[in-house]
Length: 279
Image (cartoon, rainbow, N blue to C red; front, side, top):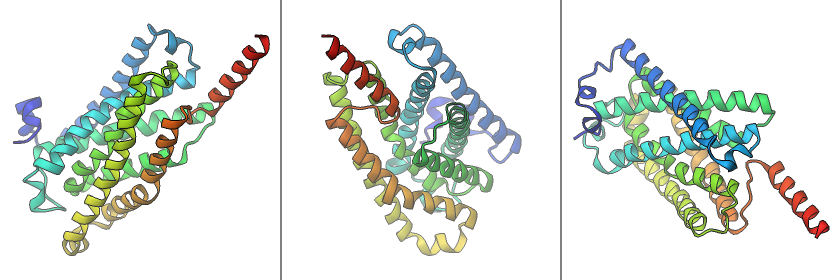
């Protein structure tokens, strides 16, 4: 049984080959994430900590909320793809189903939203996160190719499970901003976050194993425009991004600092030193 049946039965019968249907789905996805971003800002305006943040940190706060919601949805899709799919496995390159069609269009909409907001924010505040940009632009390119060529759903719905760490990462950052880094909930969340990155490595190895098992067929029929971003992203994630983020989050569990905004840590240190001098 597909996941979309639990959302609405009509999603099972949509014409996913229609350009109009696909465009509308991506547009609805983008607008939904923009709406979540705006709602997060509205709700945050009632929170003292949020109001004390600088504007660029408010943008990051709202992005963390949207990413967290997407991460939860992506995890559900990914779990279905890894453990319950019995359709896509029949053809690891070209097999599709209503659930995978729905998923890849929603995911593409998220990455369009993500790179747009992140790009605007970085241009305004003159900052740049190399790994995050590489990850999101490769993901955008990869899912755009998946949607355009209507192939690669087998790896796409499994790969989105890599977002399992996103909700815990967002919670980690918001709790840090609320000065709750010494609380039990922050430590418990950080423990889960670190192990979610360990599970990311397990999933990446699983995707490499599946690729090995089907490599003859993949090499023979997979479009090169999908092959390149898919395995470039998987290689970068396995060798560089996941190990690096695992290290950073493990370090953060021991020394709770906001490494997204180093100037915030410097300001806190200066303020702390000034208070000690006055005392």
